[in-house]
Amino acid sequence: MTTTIDDAGLRDLGERIAGDVVLPGDEAWDSARQAWNLAVDQRPLAVVYPESADDVVATVRHAAERGLRIAFNAGGHNAGPIGWSRPTLLLKTERMSGIEIDPAARRARIGAGVLAKPLAVAAGEHGLAYLAGTSPDVGVLGYLLGGGLSWMARQHGLACNTIVAADIVTADGRLIRTDRDTEPELFWALRGGSGNVGAVTALEIDLLPITEIYAGTMFWPIERAAEILTAWRAWIETVPVACQSLGRMLQLPDAPFLPDAIRGRSFVLVEAAFLGPASDGEALVQPLRDFGPEMDTLTVMPPSELSVVNMDPDMPVPYSGEGILLTDLHRDSIEGLVEAFVGSPLLHLEVRQLGGAAATRSPGHGVLDAIDQPFVLFTFGLTPDADARAAVDRHVEHVLGRIAPWDSGRRYLNFAESKMDPRSIFPAESYDRLLAARRRYDPAGLFVANHAVE
Image (cartoon, rainbow, N blue to C red; front, side, top):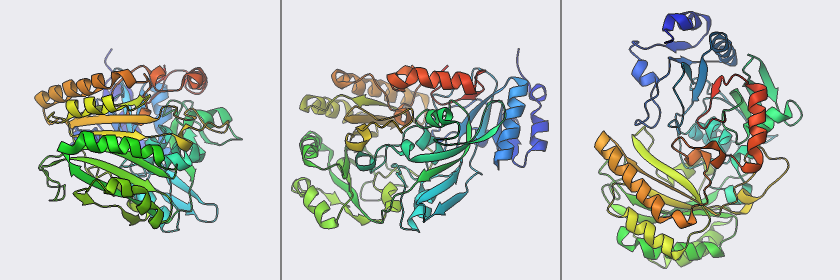
């Protein structure tokens, strides 16, 4: 049976909450249901913009009473795997954007809609930093609940394990504060378990006393891709865990948001970030500088500026891609990746070094305790139309085929852009426990995570 707007009582919900409910046919409908990836077609029954935890409680209770489900967007990244087969409300939490910094405790309290750049700036005003990723407009909540691979992961581990407390609305409509001592199983399930156990309205996270980091990018013409990536692969064997880096290939469009020096050109890059004195950082990267980069942006910067290193677009775009965790990166695999990428319709391919603290386990961690694999690969291309999407998808598969001998079979949630078996995402040793937490806190399957355990 088809659920109608009137059946679902959504006009009544809109009158009972401080936020807004946007319905099909409303002028704002198409923009409201839009994800950050414009190629993702989100099909909710309605879009709810809560402004407070009370609004989330009211929405959860409303959905539970009427047999509806709830999905989430903050920044709207990684929305492709969300399922819309049953009547579902989309909670867009962007109005819940409060940030409170406690400098003495080195902690931040953030609302469910806070984005990466504002949090980095707010923490930086107090000489502090959080374990931010590469994108300035990703939702911090989804980034943290999904794992959180930062520029400091090899030194400080996964960002999900910096969460110290959460306010969460459970499927029975209770607003709970959870931490290591209160509802500890719920607290465990949040950290790396995505949105599988409830609707998080606020997080408290640890901050680090970091004011400077030596970081940036070196560019070479794409024709040198195999040479430079092979050199980078050898170089990372020599670096300390205080250094995080990635090897990358870019085939850039002639787009107005790109600087003139790189617009419409193709490059092989090494991006790096080093926690230590600039003089040590300069000495560390000198073996790569000896290869004569065409451009070199490595410099000392505050952590709040790290998002500029990766040059992620600061606006929604249509794209298709995928990420996998690798067992290794051999010379043969580098040559295969270069051959598959150069001249293809793909925009981006990166291989990021992991290890260090990111691979270190602790009984105090959550669902995603650590990532065992030493590398993660991610590739994508822009897909403005169906023909472009088909071509990009073919070439993504070609890239993954060339790297298949080193595919671990494991996936990192925040880079897993398509629906897949969640057992490939959540650690084997955690999966059954996460499923049990899901059954305990959401037995009817009210909440729809981007990678759901059912």
